[in-house]
Amino acid sequence: MSESAGLPCELQEKLKIILETALLASPEALTLSQMKLLSDEPLSSRDLETLLLEIQRDWQNRGVELVEVSSGWRFRARPHMQAYLDRLNPQKPPRYSRAVLETLAIIAYHQPVTRGDIEEIRGVAVSSQTLKTLESRGWIEVIGMKDTPGRPELFATTKQLLDDLNLRALEELPSPGQMMLEV
Amino acid sequence: MSESAGLPCELQEKLKIILETALLASPEALTLSQMKLLSDEPLSSRDLETLLLEIQRDWQNRGVELVEVSSGWRFRARPHMQAYLDRLNPQKPPRYSRAVLETLAIIAYHQPVTRGDIEEIRGVAVSSQTLKTLESRGWIEVIGMKDTPGRPELFATTKQLLDDLNLRALEELPSPGQMMLEV
Amino acid sequence: MTGDTFIASIHGEPLKSLPQDLYIPPDALELVLDAFQGPLDLLLYLIRKHNLDVLDIPMAELTRQYLEYIELLQEHRLELAAEYLLMAAMLIEIKSRLLLPKPPKTLDEEVEDPRAELMRRLQEYEQMKLAAQKLDQMPQAGRDFEFIQVMVEQKFERLPEVTLDDLRMAWLNLLERARVHTHHTVKREALSVREQMSHILRCLQGGDFVSFDSLFDLNGGVPRLIVTFVAMLELAKEYLLEIQQSETFGNIYVRISRAAM
Image 1 (cartoon, each protein chain N blue to C red):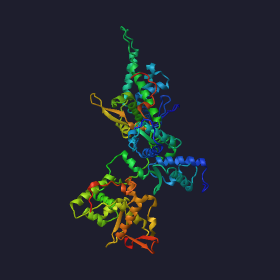
Image 2 (image 1 turned 90 degrees about the vertical axis):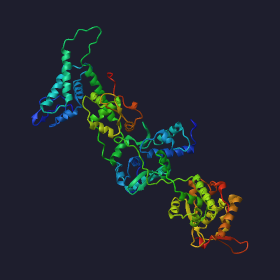
Image 3 (image 1 turned 90 degrees about the horizontal axis):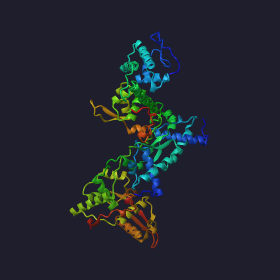
Image 4 (image 1 turned 180 degrees about the horizontal axis):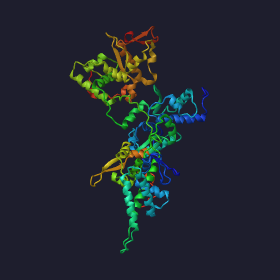
């Protein structure tokens, strides 16, 4: 597996077409190791990334772009195209309530947290509906039980949340503002 | 609404980008009237179709194609990309039955042969389904009739079979080796 | 919430004193409650509205406003969540502790400000409240942009693949079987001849006479010429070809035999 030599031009073009097709057709982001399966010859991560950056460049002035998200690479329509896409499908997804958003923020920034932790920070009870909304969107999940009386569930955010916000990692979440006092 | 004048170049480029994005992002085929919603100016069906044909041409050598289906226009992966896409979610490839494989082997190694020849060599009757499977796959074809009672069809293998096996000529078929029986 | 003072009327009764700056739609005081995410949110609202410092909350003022607010809500028989009443109790407790004379400092022990816990909770809550707003402002899949998924027609049934080895094994099996049943004789003729036979028949599909010469590939080399010739003899032997020559040394013409068409 060559580390840096780069690929012959023809093979490169062929691979680019296959990669582009797979990325366009895949219902989810593709990881580097998945994409390596698409090449008949062994392909180094470095060569693969070079190809991905080239595809990214090919799409530079189009309405669709290739982005890297937490679970891999995928194509998305650029946000400024949304106004046009909304004309085709005028049903906007509902905006989430403040209760849902605050619960999500607490899980995102304090994870893993129990329902009790969330209630403590918000100062009010958290409805099951709120948690269900986030779970069914695939944004949060139970990752275990806390070893305290009652063994409450521990919630964390998912890769899908990062994907849906077009982020590669949790650290890319906006800072919640200057920390005022340490918790 | 201009009927034929064509659109100014810049507007055309902008519309092409929007159309392409909408067609890529839409989970279903888009009708002409849906696509007309994407233009800020009134757009004639004729101008729209010209743009669609241009997009189709732009995608000519790619792994994805713009096609017109009964419900409108949509992008889809080209059939020959299927093999690559299958690598991403591997399922066990189906296999031909022994009858089909042996029939194919006889036609390949012994062509041109009649159904009777095949039956004589295999020692059992050859079902029409077996021959139909190979014919519809494009691997065998009837190249004439034998001048014997009943005028049976003569089968031979096709160039498609060679292509699919990655061979240049039939001679490149592996020799079955010493196990060959001589008359 | 707007900047205007709004006097609402509930069940026909005008409301006398509403918290300033608070928008209350008529006949819907519940919405006031809904506007806040809980007592911490309400306290933050009061603190921010009066431009108070979270780190140095004037407890008397804050407590007074808070109590005023929940009294108003209670007067109108609105069910207050227990958290609001709990917070009221906590505020009163903090306020009363601040009013009590401070015990003399003992040793180096710091006397904890009774407001500290409340301050901490308010700050933590406010931070998450702002974080929630920021999250909501981020472009979100499905709302602000779409992921692309080009359709893959599942119609193409997956076709079985055949390898050279499959073919070879199938042929070997046949030969093996044929050897067991010796009355079947199977012989593998030179493939090139067999292939050429198919090729010639294909060339003659049209049914017309074709010139004998044209069936030979002159660029294919001598072996190819011989193979083609042998293939033609084989075909003639099997009555699949008609070969005609009208005069000695004249052009030879070949066509597929009527019977073979």
